[in-house]
Image (cartoon, rainbow, N blue to C red; front, side, top):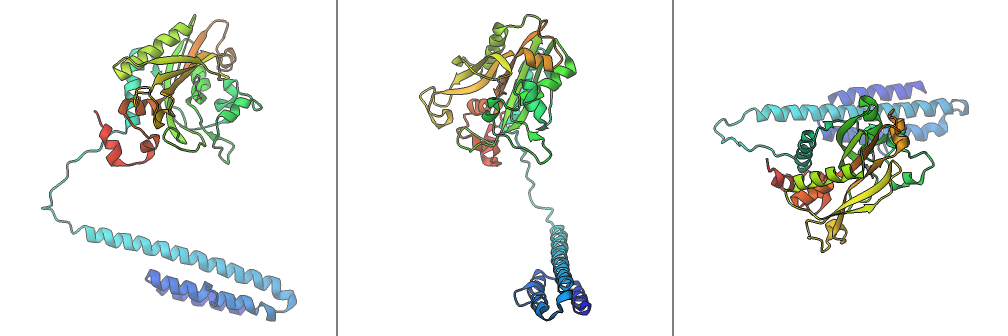
Length: 342
Ligand code: PHE
């Protein structure tokens, strides 16, 4: 019984060592693993094996089958590497008289807008912070006054990882760490990539950028919030934009607002980029909830603060007139290089 599997194993090893092309590997695969191949043959001879040996025989054949599969994959990879090397060797016979291209790359619109925003806030005394894209439940939800049973968790379809961690659904996930890192008073912005399991269309993407900002000090009020929002928008657009402030609910701010700007693509008439409403939700914001300050180690009796979550991707769309949000992740150089600007 042993004999047949080991003979087959040896024969295969000899054959595969000689196979020098993907065609040769394929015929070897058919010969051994195909419907009428050696392994199938062995399997059908199971009938003739003594009852008490059947189990062991089956195991041996299966083991041999997996070994053959693995060796075929390995051989295929090896051939691919050899083939690549051959192509590289050939390419080295290049023509030195060929004209050279001096084209340079261009910045992604998100990079451009992010740098611009960073500059605006830097001059207003804000520090700029980076934060991981993989966060834990505590930072993304609990520290933001969103306990496990809270219905607000439904607002964000979250990508969970097998480790129990998750891809951050909003830049607010960094609030707690930054409060703990610096304490109060504090002015910080933290741009970052966010992920939500959403169906995509002209104005929704599952991967997008936000830029969070927080300012915490004694006596910070809604008028400070409105001042900074207006200042930021007039600087970035270099023109007056029409904005409106509506009440908005977020468990980590109280009161909370939605700051909308009139769509600059259609001028407010309604188009697919603004869901035909003429307005775009650009910057949810509000006064930081006392619990959130407390979780961040800051005494809410002494300090107050505001927070905003600017939609950096939407801002880029408005600023550069990008009609479909999906263009931004498309990797299409012809589309993206139009926005080089600087
Ligand atoms: N994190 C919220 C969101 O992405 C936005 C927000 C940030 C709201 C800061 C209020 C204050 O939906």
